[in-house]
Amino acid sequence: MNLAKFTAASVLLLVLLAGARFVQSTEVVPFTTPSQVLAAKRTTLAIRYSEDKNTAINMVGTSLDPRAMGKAEVKRKAGRTRIKLEMENLGHPQSLGAYYTTYILWAVAPEGQADNLAELPIKSKFEMDATTPFQTFGLIITAEPHSAVKLPSSVIVAENTLQKGTVGTIQASQIEYRGDPGTLYVVSLPNSPAVDADFHTPLLILGARRAVEIARRAGAGVYADSELREAEVKLAALEQTWPKRRKDEKDYSGVAHDVMRLAERAREVAVERGNQARLAAERQEARSTIAQAQSEADRARTEAERSRAEAERSRAEADRARDQAQEALARADREAAQARQRVEQAQSEAEKAKAHEELARIEAERARLQAEEAKRERDLAQQRLFVSLSEILETRREARGLIVNLSDVLFDTGKATLKPGAREKLSKLAGILLAYPGAYRLEIEGHTDAVGSDEYNLKLSQERAESVRNYMVQAGVAADRMIAARGFGKTRPVASNETAAGRQVNRRVEIIISDTDYQSKTSLR
Image (tube, rainbow, N blue to C red; front, side, top):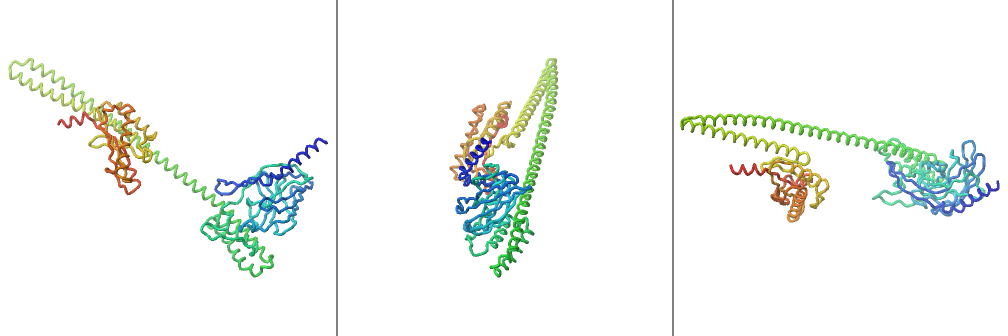
């Protein structure tokens, strides 16, 4: 028994010694939630009050109001906790800032729930009673813009501490609670005249005004218009009434509290509906994004299927043409053999000459068929090359060959450095060219938009063309395949430089792939 008392006394002594540390450990940090509230993290005493036992605690001022002091008698009975509070030396709330019109006593549970127990009178000394359903809680007093607030501000002017002989299970715990948005705890908005503390207007009137201001800033004009109008009508009536009855607060206090209650309701509705509207907008945006992605995926799938069908059709036509050419060649071989046999059997010179002429005609026909077969094979190879290139980079056909386009986004801005994505695409391009059976040559041309000087753009386009050429050589493409790597700067635009989209199209590197065998044979004709 003595050991238990000694242990309890030791714990109490340690808590009392640590009380000074608990008093001022407040931290205010922003919450990243749609409601834009603040979380005030405060390490203070949360006391679990025993049933049917009286407990005495002290109330001490924080650094915001160090003169404030008081005590409280607390008793837990029949599921409710009764608090009898005595305070003195609470300063005028306007001394803390023009926004504050009253003090509120809060019970804050360790889990963070805050219970608005009572509005405190603005007197140098007073007593009052309050109750809360909480059994374990800490008591704090905050300065507030009006008495109907549902969330405490971070302006804590006093809080509970133990006194000698306090009865209860003591829990020193970190209490977190959500406070009203920091953007609402200002009197003046940006670009509006500053508002000074007002020690002449009754605090009830100031509180009613602050409540309506908070509701407006919370978006009540958009999301809770009818609720806000009701509060504004009451406030307008109050503004007409109170100057005539200034000396008798009872004549207008009921209306002032009605304004605060209605305005707080408008703020709550506006926050809730605003959050719902934001969630609905986010859901709609997500649905639109998903639908767009699905549409793009369907379009890409359709295009891929079309390209695959075209490639299959081209292969089928090439196979059919090859079979026909082989059949024609076999027929020509048979006719040539027959012609040679006739020559050998011919008895007269005329018959021999005629047979030789027929043999020459057949040989010429055979050569023509072979040339056509070679052209078909080359066309088929070029078609396969075109399809393969189109799958990795934008590719088009022109008279000078296949044009492969590398857009500006494959380079770092204003530089000739290839991005990883560009190197990957060029590696695939090099692999396709190394597997291509025909003879080809490459020309690489760099182009820019019209932004910047001629000299700068010419140098940048040349460096980008050379960067592509060097990478292709490193990837295995023979250097003698490279005819040239040239930069043309901004001299060859393919779109208007008056728009951002046109300028992006103009910033490009083009690789021209030409069939040297075909070009040489064409030039000989």
